Every structure is written in structure tokens, then in C-alpha cells.
Length: 382
Image 1 (cartoon, rainbow, N blue to C red):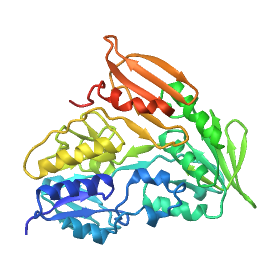
Image 2 (image 1 turned 180 degrees about the vertical axis):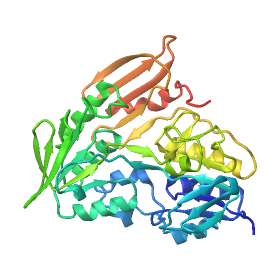
Image 3 (image 1 turned 30 degrees about the horizontal axis):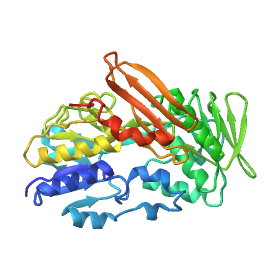
């Protein structure tokens, strides 16, 4: 029997690659392996569920059986890969060896966690997939006060969503502004003001040091002496690409699993895409680059080697109270920022010395200018 193309992961990366591959090749055996329940869903929708009053089932788009049928594939759920043997083109699931023609790593990134003193560590919820969301949703039923750790993109999106869904929200992070690695301070101030207008309370500077149970909920102790009463905690302090299995198998890893423009790892017949992949030096945890990779890699797997190209990759942040689109300045490029507008409507532009546009951050009404600006941006991978 022909060895299958094996995809590890059934998130946006895994399922979209499978769909693109099946458009080009309907017959090669295809096996998808996932540690979770294998339902198809869009991860960006996890931070819109409370505002839309949708539980995990409401965010699910298809059961694994339906996906297997659509893709003419086998989907193995609740299954963990325990090792990879590149020399023999096989992977291990416990004692079971699974041979592959090509192996694609699409297993994403894991949430970063920090140790916190106290007896309520089980009340801290990372939300990185549909099962995480279901657990948090069940815990949040009947609860009102949510503390969010982190004021990055995910923390701010969840704050907006939870407040719209009827919750009180405090946010804690050891930084001076929201989305510090992503936003110009003027745009950050606009987003923070918008969320504060909804009722969000920001505690910028301290960290959570202790979380303790009380009769009527939880007590969160911050490093600056503040005490915040809450009912549960969302951890949104960042993601780390999953690289451990790849590194143990001898594949080159850096920020993610290192791949070239054909998404090939340092070993033949093993590829990676999505949040776990470092593509030509770039590890981008967003949907647009993932989709570009899925289309290119499908071509390669179907017999037409295709290098991935990244055009401009603007990021739309789901904070409806203050709409936000940002195109970060590409790594290694430097320019000068100019800021126009006031209040919620900020246009921050970064230009190189020759006048060319390198990046932008647009909030409020200024997001209407994104299409025109995108045409002037440099590609990330030409």
C-alpha cells in the first residue's frame, strides 16, 4: 500500500492544507492526526464567541467525520505523536509506527504559562483551541468578573468580547501600553481608551503574583500591592511555537521549526507551516501567511515545487469598540513614524529615508485607508 501524506494538526493550517491538496490530488492517501477532537473551526473566532453568545458547538463548523468524508482522508482524533523517525520516514504513536510519504507539521503553538502562588491555579484558563474555549465557557457560566493576564492582541480581543458578553474585565500586564510589540503608542492609546470606554480596567506595570480562593470568588494579588477580586482568569500572555518533537527528531529549530521557502525542514519529506513554522526567518502567527503557505505547499506536495511568497500582511484586530488594522514594519527595516488624527481615529505611518512606506497602524475611521496603503507596502517575502 502507498504510504500516506500525513498532516499532524487539524487547525486552520492542517485542514486548509488538506483542502488545497485535495483540489490538486484526489487519490493519494491522506492521514490527519490531531491531539484534540478534530472539529473544524476558525481559531480567530474564539475571541468573538461571548459577544455572539456562541458556545464551542456554535463555533464548530464541521465534525471530524464530516471532514474525513470531504477530504477523502482518515482523521485520527485525540491522538498524540510520540516521536518522529526521519531516517525511516515514519512517526510513532506510542508503540505504533505510521509510515509516511511526506510528513507535514501543522501542530501550532502552545500558550505560555507563568507560575503563580496560591491555591487557585486551576482557575487560570488559556484559550488556544476549541476545547480550551469550551472549558472556559463552562467555568464562566454564571460568573461576572474576569481578570485577563496580557494586553497583547489576544488579551485585548478577549476584553472587548467578554465585556460585550456581559462580563466585568480587568487586564494586567508588565508593560506601558497595549500590544507593545505590535503598535505605535498613539494607536495603542486609542485602543486602550476605547476599551476603557466599554468598562475595561487596565493595570499596566505589575504582574500577578498570587491567586487565592475566597468564599465569593478569587483574590488576585499583584506585584505592586493591588488586590483585584475576580471569578476566573484568562491567560493571554503569548504563544510559543511547538518545536520539542521536531528538535528531538533532529530537525533544525529556532523560533519555530525552521523551513525554507518551499516549507521544507532540514530533513527530506518533512514540511511545516502555520504557527509552528519559521519560514525563511519569519514566524508569523496570523491567518494570511498561513493561507499563503497552504496554497504553496499543496502545489509542492502535488508535484509542482512552489516557493511561498508573502505580500503585505496587514493584521486586522477584532476590537470593534476601536477598529484596528496594523502592518508591522518588516524585520531589519527602520523608518520614521508620523502620526495624524486624534481620539479614536489615528493614522500612524512609518516611512523609510527614501519616502517609501514600511508599515502602519490605523484605528477608528482611519482603517478605511488600509486598501490604498496596502498597495504601497513592501512584500514580506518577494
